[in-house]
Image 1 (tube, helix red, strand yellow):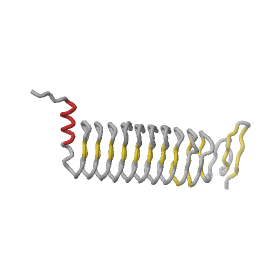
Image 2 (cartoon, rainbow, N blue to C red):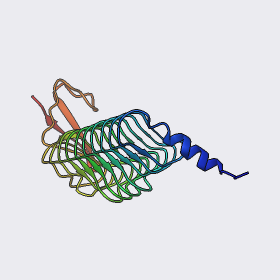
Image 3 (tube, rainbow, N blue to C red):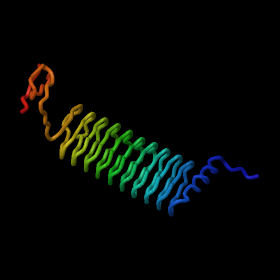
Image 4 (cartoon, rainbow, N blue to C red):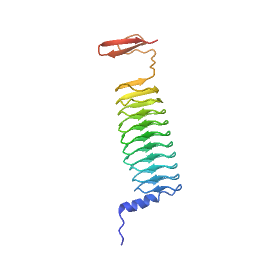
Length: 210
């Protein structure tokens, strides 16, 4: 009697799950393609829900739909919900791209999130960073976040926050924006509404806000 390994049986079984759609390929154990066309899975325990021209090369990863989304090697436990031409690159494990188009989490950048938008990028080596939306926003520091807007950058600083348009961070552990607007607020010192207090090393300064 010919012996057949467990992994071979599972791989054969998972390939059979490509019953919906056309020209889909599953070569990883316990992986599935539910529908769509020209989709490929080359690792174990991964799923493509639908759409077309998707590729998953990592274990425990998911592409929901859309077109031409890619999860490359050693980017295990990653997720692309949909959209088009989004990619999670080699070594970018635990990456999340919700949707949008042309968004990228680059190589060896782990535990990162791009919510959506267009042409947003988290660069090599950045960890625990995020771009929530907007377009052409770039993060290269760890633990930094761009909340939205366009053309923003964390300047390579860690722990930087950015929101607005064409804003580049100039310091770590700080939030950057084009403008701040405060109305009828009282912060510290028991001051009157319309006064914003800034606590500094040498004492308390304040700026009146109309």
